[in-house]
Length: 371
Image (cartoon, rainbow, N blue to C red; front, top):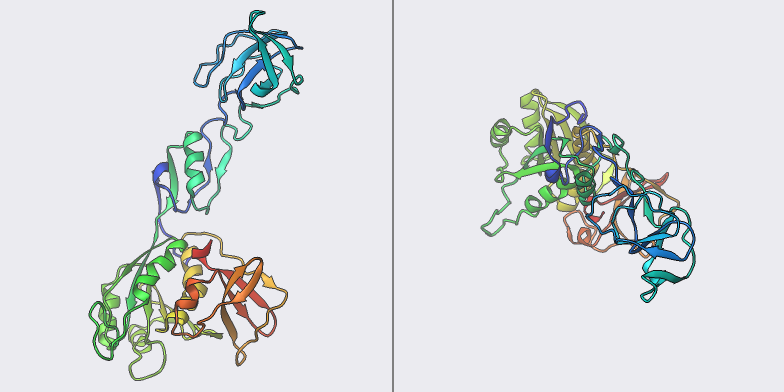
């Protein structure tokens, strides 16, 4: 569903691409390194010892093209151009200079191997070589690689824009009142969906009125709408009546998962996606991980996360449904954390993984904020 409506492509300065998803592969504009250079401080030497010292070569010097003759050595700084004819770099700690005999290297720990400590032009990247592939997320090291490779602009996907609409008369907002509860999902959802490439805006809470939800949905412009609460069949649950009124196409009507199974994924008549999550915080996060994550990754044409199987897990499925267990990987051992009830968030703050336990096997989902 997400991949059927991918976000648009735009070109941005490479320095502004952190966290963005590449819409096409990026190729290098230059070779890296751009010239043969020294990997160590020492001497560029040719032939056998002893070597006569010549003029030094420093980082930032332009290559002068003078061929190093047999028996010659030039002091060389890390990053300095390597003269043509160089056998290798003799490290600074491996040679002693005879200051009496005109600067001749009279004592060494050995002759360097051919090419030793020389960084060859293009050994990391050749001109036109693919640096980053389509669907990759630009991370901090990639910014440096792009700058070094002479890439000024990169093609990226526009962020997946999401409107989050919390539903419920009980939500207190900023002002607490008897019978009301703080909305824990409003600050959680933008941060939860961010690793999936989303820009999530939070709307003011919607009362438990079908008309109010319809008005909010009509006012939204994001391609993806996410709600919390109102997904069951009670008198105050307004999601289904609203979807019926709109003539929406329901694609997922609940999942066999506990907690988090009370979800609805629907396509509105105008093509927007509506993911209705349960109101309980842990249940909502589980639903978002299993449905919102793949939906948003699809919008950006990014690959889906893998769900590796565990050989065994000391837990069981619940009533024929998959049991979602909040876990932490500690010293290579996966352990369930406390506070697993559907209305709790505390366990997630210490968790690294979500284990999906079924009667057949157990699958493991890495929590995106723990990577």
